[in-house]
Length: 149
Image 1 (cartoon, helix red, strand yellow):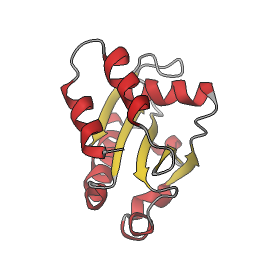
Image 2: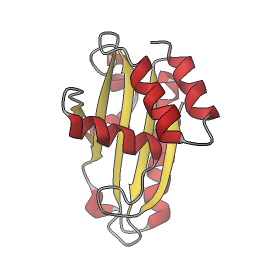
Image 3: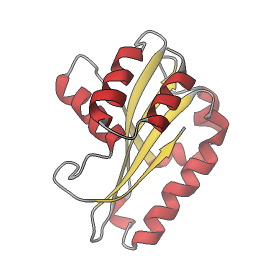
Image 4: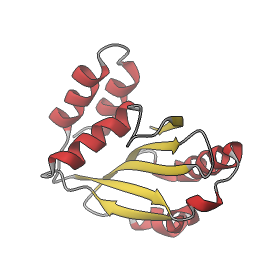
């Protein structure tokens, strides 16, 4: 998998996103060389103000800049009323989250990280929905979606 090719496809797909970008992602995805991870913010009950939740995500993405050549991510802020939920999907080079990311980005410990089982069709569908900013996501509206590429 060439990560820049995926990022380019994601950025340039304007129409038929599911048919072009999501299908293209799974065609490109190399499960030997890359891994997918879901993340869930551990303290969603603290997300009482929308702009604060959005700023948390924005700051996290800024601090992840050190992983730009090794990762792609989507972060969702879910709901129109507090508490807002923060969930994400990350693609990392390698089978584990890179150690330098865990060591250098202190926000990582604020999330529960779960490796995606790509043999589970429900998890694969959730990956596609997160990449696509599918709404409603898990029955709730999206306040915002941010991409790390």
